[in-house]
Length: 301
Image 1: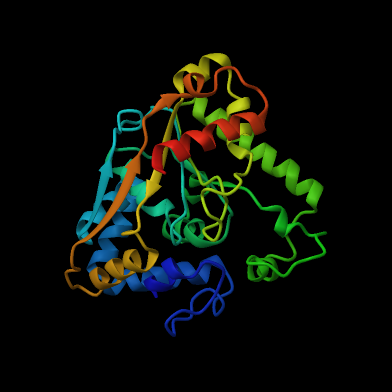
Image 2: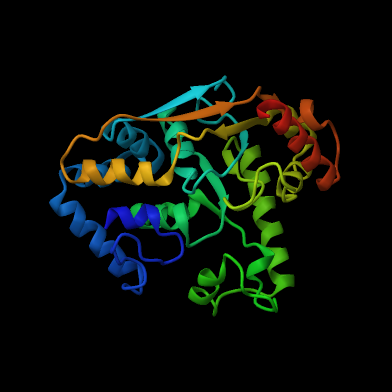
């Protein structure tokens, strides 16, 4: 069942495990999770740790317990303590990349973080189920235009999400406004010293070298001049040794009371600079996004 938490991103069935489709509300899902916790000492400890210290810090400890080693290549000085404002920008690999990033920040004692992501699927849904009391603070919700209620062509990789959330999907105009409010909130949180995680291509099936969404530019353009001088940009690249299946397998084996083999996930961090140093006083969101995209390519390719 915990396996399904990691592998199901829109209600699918994996490896014969039914999870989200079979259960229709958060309360039922939570009951099943706590039922699992009652029979798994590891999960019981994990849930208690979440309640005591917060999900990111508990997740960092869980990585150790699951014998997962996150190898960071590069400097972490811009994000290695609570209150250090940083915009982390990087790639999707196979899904659930938010989890190792959250564990990394948790290893620095940080819970002051939010991830720009589609709500109610993938890692966002997992965070909701693991920490219902605080999960909303970890996800800054955005929706792609592919999910607009008034979009005519609905046959794309979000079709299952559309069917599951058909009643709540906004129109294209409302979706745009809601996304801008989320990006404004991200800028506000950065000014408060948060770590904000962004995946600029928006989906794991899109190559990081393709066109980026303009969200990064929208966030930076909303920062005050003084904030631009303080907010760091940390570009990251998860290497091929990371996969969501390896992540899930480690947690499942540990939940069953066995010791997982050691798994290593490699995270490259580019040179960290302030927003001011990288984009200056540029105000056009497209221009800002393109500057950051080129810096990303120079750093990792």
